[in-house]
Image 1 (cartoon, rainbow, N blue to C red):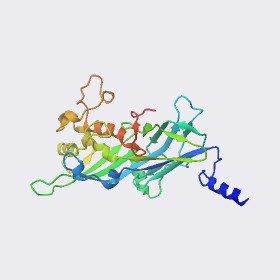
Image 2: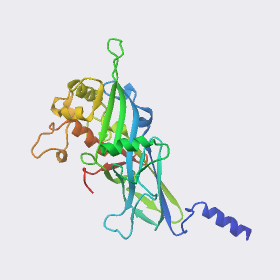
Image 3: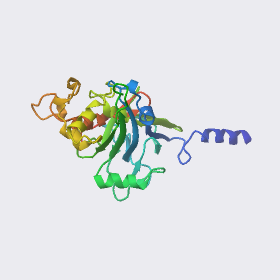
Image 4: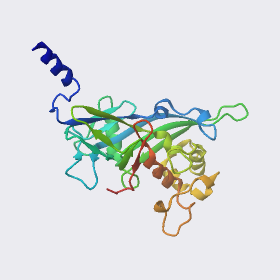
Length: 297
């Protein structure tokens, strides 16, 4: 009897406490990339700027777990909690799905959104962050300090970047999350674990990807063209044409982001940065979730 009891206890340790042995679960841990936490030293940018991320806030609705074409086999959606949340990914957020039949669920995604009446701040997130997102209708904000390299041995004034992203112009839905394989695998009696990291550094890529070189100078150029107060806003990015960016050959919008018949250098730097937001989610260690076009399902 004692042996049987011990075996039952050992098996139970591997099983979600509230689920049967024949079912499984998956736990997603939302966090931030190392560079978002630690910043970018000057040696990691093409133009020798250093960047620190002062504030990162996201409006999170849910992870999605499914299998396209087989909705009855694998279709799970919902936070597994009472409400949506506003949170800082540097402090983490966990969402768990229990009671899933064992199956491969290759189609995993993420949904962000501006706060609604029932949205709450996550533990460790100040309530004023929820207000900041709600008042602007934003689902993401990133504040950073960018310090240019010294000139003639003299330190230069840093720039304060205030980047704001709204559901009308920026992706809120991300899909196709994959690393070595797509999605997650549900195994009976166990819990799969997957990390999703927000990589704010990808907003500084000079090409549309998650691996291009990082360059900060266009943000300073946008401010110089604006009011030159060393506070860089999205409005200033929207006034800087891609065709006028120094080293502008790197800054090209893909066809889907351009007006019909427009050249690759058409559009604004604001358009470019918003498009880069589609590449800010890392899945597990080496993978990626891709943002859908704004307003897309």
